[in-house]
Image 1 (spheres, rainbow, N blue to C red):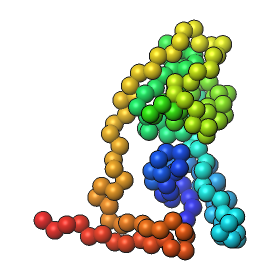
Image 2: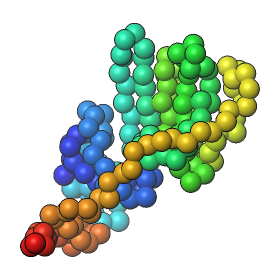
Image 3: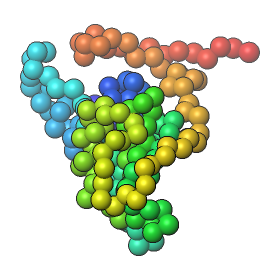
Image 4: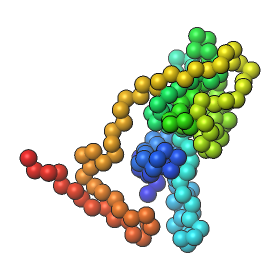
Length: 173
């Protein structure tokens, strides 16, 4: 299954099932799905792409890499929020999980590399546009829903040939 609404367990984010509703993810999934359909078991690829999106809102160019909602802390690693030109880096349990840039999009690829390498949070690199040492603050992300809460289908098996979906009826009250 591939597409911008397909759910998959992402290994960079504790195998949480994710839906990355962006056309870039749909293209990446389609390429991997096509490769895996014509490949034997030993040569299949996992879907490991790091989520990326961008938008322009009220004149600000906003770009994001990773999953900011999987964070317990964040830090403004570059620039200044007062100047509305900055990079916010998100961390979870001591590693970088995401970065969001406001009019600093040239840094997106750099932070994507840090996410892929499970770099420590907060980032320890020095940048020319940072005046003082960044101080992490709580991310204040709303509680994540548990993936199985209220589930009506359970998927089992890791090998595509063994995958099964089973309907689970809610308990009668």
